[in-house]
Amino acid sequence: MSKSAAWLDYQVQAGTPVLRAGGEWNVRQLADLADQLEKFEFGKYTYPVIDLSEITELDTSGAWFLKNIVDKSHRAGVETKMVGISAKHEPLITLVQQAASSSVKKEIPQRRMWLVNVENIGQAAFEVARQCKALINFFGITVIALGRSLRHPRRIRINSLVHQVEKTALDAVPIVCLLSFLIGVVLAFQGADQLRRFGAEIFTVNLLTLSVLREIGVLMTAIMLAGRSGSAFTAQIGTMQVNEEVDALRTLGLDPVEVLVIPRILALLISLPILTFLSDVMGILGGALMAVAVLDLTLSQFLRQLEEAITLTHFLVGMVKAPFFAYIIGIVGCYEGLRVSGSAESVGRMTTKSVVESIFLVIIADALFSILFSVLKI
Image 1 (cartoon, rainbow, N blue to C red):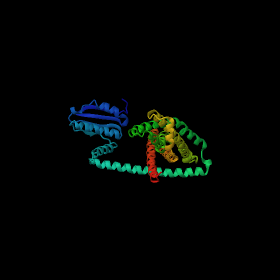
Image 2: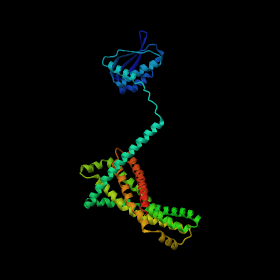
Image 3: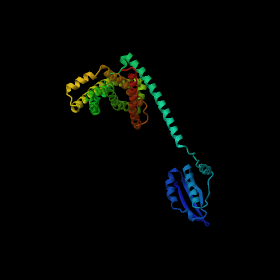
């Protein structure tokens, strides 16, 4: 045992059991003290005395350990007294004892479950309101930056724009075409199954055309881009935020919205209408395949019925939504990316959040468009 190490020793002095304590009683010695304490059985002795005269150093943890010894003895039914307390250690021991005596647990009143639920709903509502306010504010910032870029086209970063168009449009063509084709197959099959009961299978073509051109084509494409490109925007910008690259842009006098956000939004404004058109085509092709296979229609009959069902209005109703959905996906993805802070865990959380918010807002916008077109009788 080194000279400064904390130690405990038990002796019987003049018929009185004494627990001697010495050395440095600090946080570094607590493990050794606990091991030594296990050697003593306080319950065997009537009035143990703790002699503290050889303690050279005492900190708060040491004082708490000393108090625990007294408490342990007390629980064993033994009255313990401390002697040899130095003047410099006495205030700390007294303070710890007072703190222990005042740390009586306060009874926490039981709250009613319905009140807790109401409070949680209220907090969630205020949080949603704050998010909406911040998102609207960011929408205004992007509109101003986009207007400034269009007014001065040299401010648009062409290389970044082309790169984003490649990522959001060209790389997404296979998945968009495949899923749209399969959705067309499903729509035609379900429509034929229902209309056959009324002997109106031929109108499956009308149902397919109306559904794909007005709703399904643009909506499914927007949802796929929200999950694919919107999440990528959040992850890319969020990673730059974590690595302090966004702060570096500000230090260089560059506007992160103009450098990072505007090229991505412009890319989506270009990509989503193109992908929507491809989705419409592939959806109708999938429906045509199923109609010919299930309805026993010839391809010429399908095309003749398609010519009667398809109109420029149906096509434009779907296409006009594409830029709005693109803007929603773009600002939500970039906004959540700029809100990333701390670590990779924050990047993952914000990425998930941006996908959910984008899809939610796209569906709301689609519902509003449906109401608007219904009012305008389009």
